[in-house]
Structures are given as C-alpha cells and as structure tokens.
Length: 304
Ligand code: 13P
Ligand code: SF4
Image 1 (cartoon, helix red, strand yellow):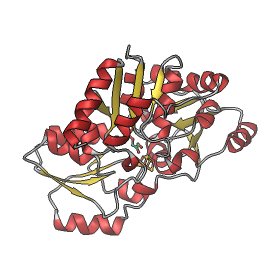
Image 2 (cartoon, helix red, strand yellow):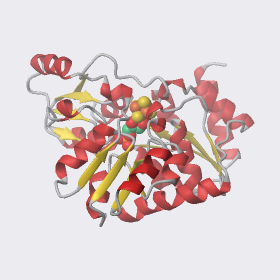
Image 3 (tube, rainbow, N blue to C red):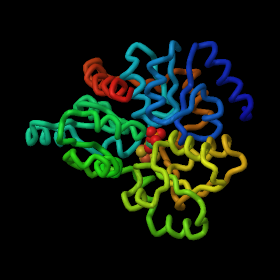
C-alpha cells in the first residue's frame, strides 16, 4: 500500500468507527497532518474531555494515552504503539511519595503528566509544562514535592521563591541532552535568532532563553514574533508545525540529538493497524483510574 492509500484508509475507518485522532507535536509529520487535533500535553488532555467520539486514538507516548483514558474511563482509548513509553514517566516512586508525606505535614505532591498512572494516583495534582507555574502558585501548601522532572521543577521553583521545593532526580533524556556549550555555538552562528526553550531543558540552557514554554507556547511565540529566524531547544517534531505556520521563517535546532525515539516509534502503518484491529488499547484497573482522575481533574480546575 502506498502512503496515499494508507492515509485514505485511516480517514475512512476513522469516520466509520466514530474515532478521533489526537497527536502530539513530537510525532511524525504525516501523523500530525492526518490528526483531527495536534497539540501539547495540556491541550490533548483537555480535548480528550470534550469529545463525543467513541474511540480516541492518541498518537503519542503511553502516558498520554493513559491520561486520556483516566479522564474518559468509558471510552475506548487506543495508541498506535504500546511500546512507545516515556522513560521519564517512571523516574519517581510511590515509596518516595510516601516518604515525603511522612516528612512534611504541609505538602503538595505535584505530578508532571509525563508520569505513570500509579504516580498520578499517589499525587495531589497534575501539571503540564503549559500550566505548572499557574497551578503551583495557586496551591495553599508551602512544601512542594515535584515529580518526576527536576528541570521543570527548577524552572518553576525559581519563579516561586516563597515555596519550598523538594526535587526529584527524573529528567527527559531528549531535552537533557541539549548542552549549553553546543547551544552557545549555535547562538554564535545565529546571533539575532531568539532562543526558544522547553522547560524540560537543563537550567543553564533555560537561562539562555528568550522564551521558555511548552511545545504550543513555543509555536505561538515564534508565530507571533517579528523575528525571522529562531533557535529551537525542544524535540524536533515541532519543526513541522513551526514551518507550516511560518513558511518564511527559519528554525534551527539548538543541538544535534533532539529526537525522541519513543515518539518516533509511531508510524502511519501502525495507526492504520490500530484503527483496523483496535488491539492496542489502554486499559487500567478501575480503582487506579479513579485515583488518578482526581489529580488530573484538579489540574483542569486549577488551570482555568
Ligand atoms: P508539552 O507538549 O506539554 O510541552 O510536552 C513536552 C513533552 O515532552 C511531551 O512528551
Ligand atoms: Fe518523554 Fe522526553 Fe520523549 Fe517527551 S520528549 S516523551 S518527556 S522522552
């Protein structure tokens, strides 16, 4: 089957089964093009609560499918590749959370959505990179145990000096691989280009940014800016939407290795397969879904 036949079959099956395709900006260009909605993690979680489709096909890594399922327990949630898992989602433990709860009375456990359903279920509130600052600033607790991403935690902590942050040592290997020395070399070659940085990057890289934000935030900033070229410090899947919205602007990667191998496990063939056979379904125990739903809903409430 050629690419057009695959795309046509996906579109036909989607209609027939009343399915909706949602994609993150880091998946392959052709998947972004065929999706009904493309967005950052917050947008995808929110959109999942607004659809009346019978099936949600979440084109992203597993935690994104789990988030959609937790928010929509009665819907069928499929992901094209079950093995597309984010390593950072596992970089904290429920034992670690219990330990912090025993140490601090006045504690909020804040869980980045890039985490397993188990971790979400043990937390007080979830956040994404698009809403973490707003949500943590609205929490009454002084002590904040922020899991799993230490870089996002430091970015938020620096802006909220009245909070006492307890850091966890998780990180995204893709964003963490963007090194300051390499970024400085890129900057030296493109001195007029604003630097757009995702907060999963290291603090010293964030410190060089003209703009820090989620994937959607980066795309919006670049699209509204008068600048003609930009240095981009996030996964390179965003280049597709950046270029689509801004055909006259130029975008340069900050470093050489900004590819998420898990996001890139998704293909059009796998998307077609999962729509045909519905065999890669996210299922979670009922009690886990119930416990993970509360902090996800708290995020949606506090983000308003
Ligand atoms: P956002 O789209 O929320 O910025 O997420 C970045 C990310 O790493 C998702 O895996
Ligand atoms: Fe996980 Fe990083 Fe890949 Fe996002 S880019 S899915 S945080 S490894």
